[in-house]
Length: 386
Image (tube, rainbow, N blue to C red; front, side, top):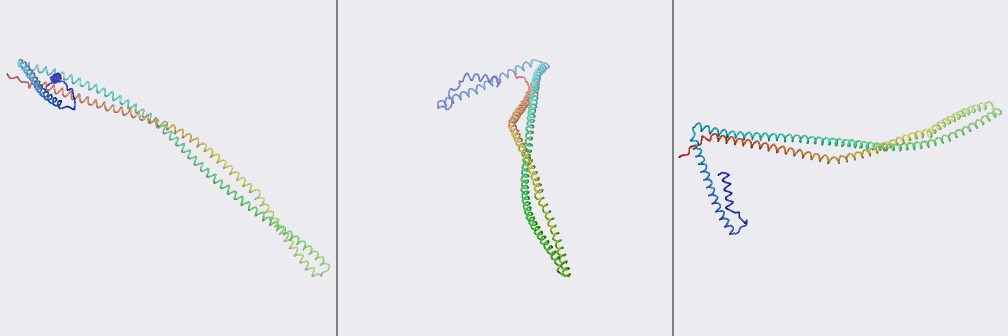
């Protein structure tokens, strides 16, 4: 049954049968009524469609009979000519349809190429934006690296300050050691003073011995004078020998006195060295160490100030980096979304293009098949029996 006949049957059915006025759930009477109506409708539907099928079969038979009658009135050459003209016209129509389908397919291909180039341009734009974002990332990473370098330099300065503090502690220990050495030298000076006092006392004793020797010498001289007057020659000789001995003892005592005086001078020189030169040297070394400590302290203060400045710079760099981070992330997200959307559009368009080409190929194949049927139709048309 054709679509036209089926449409006419639907129109007639809508005029004959009205829609139901109630819906589920149904009462018993409604169920019975619906069963009756469905039964009548089914019977009428089948009968009507059988009638339409018979009508169409009759019309087709009449059409074929009329065609066969007209073909029988023609000669064989005329029949072939009519069939050839009909097939040529049909094939010309098929060629026009195929050409139109090809043109539509080419137009769709051109549109697809346009969309593809648009997608490529958009992808290049997205790549350019991604490169700009990457350049911004490189700049941010460079700043971060520079900040890290500054931070490492600050750490190095801190370690240098710590080493300087260790040097200061070492210098303080050296100063304490020098003070202890000075105290030891002071004690040695005190001991030397005691020794000098002892030597001075010994010198005084030597002087007393010298006075005793001089007194003995005077006595000897007096005895010698007495001997010259009262004693005999032998006694005089003995006294002279004793006088010679006493004079020798006096020379020895004089030599001892000279030695004691020389030792006293050496001790005075040593005491002068310990009291004057050595404290001056200790004071000079102490002043030099104090100046060195002052210089190290100044260097440490400069390092601390530089460290504070670098910390401030590092804080500013981190603040800038934290500000640029969300912006760069948003740019990456937007660029990636645009790239994904463009890729999805390109893929969807390629799918549509492929479907259109497939549909055009199917339509062309169907058209060619119909053309083949039209060209072979005359071989299967038979004369209607009388």
